[in-house]
Image 1 (tube, rainbow, N blue to C red):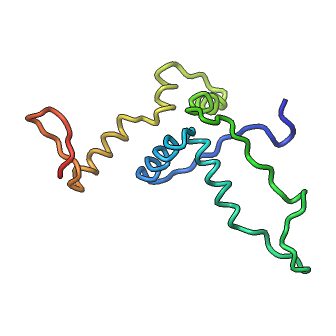
Image 2 (cartoon, helix red, strand yellow):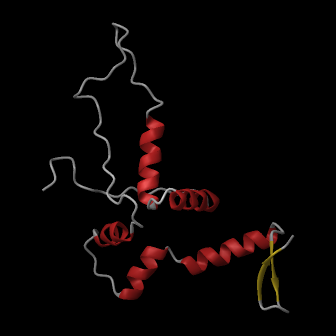
Image 3 (cartoon, rainbow, N blue to C red):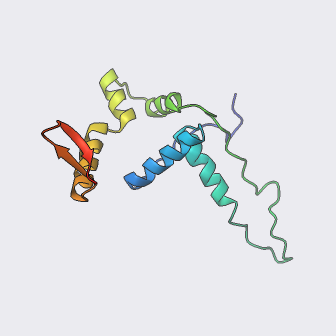
Length: 137
């Protein structure tokens, strides 16, 4: 049983698509889930922010002031179990298609928008002759 304050909760944020793709790629290189990667990077980044100095000049935090380290809930995993549980945590019932849509964040729409953006940037083009997309180099 989790101690008080140790229960899991979700955090949602919005970042540019390219940033999410970089994070996903880096997480895969480290054999981490995306959740584990973001959690680790946030905790690592926070280490650069020292607590304010006290009047005595001591800037070390007491044990009561220190935040416990976030445990790695899915070390080396893909995080799918965690994402399913986070999605279902709202208490609603999801059929297969709804759950799939919630977990994939409407990947079809994202792919369509990404391809449009890449085509307008001149990085990708559609070849009707070959029936598909190709890098435009």
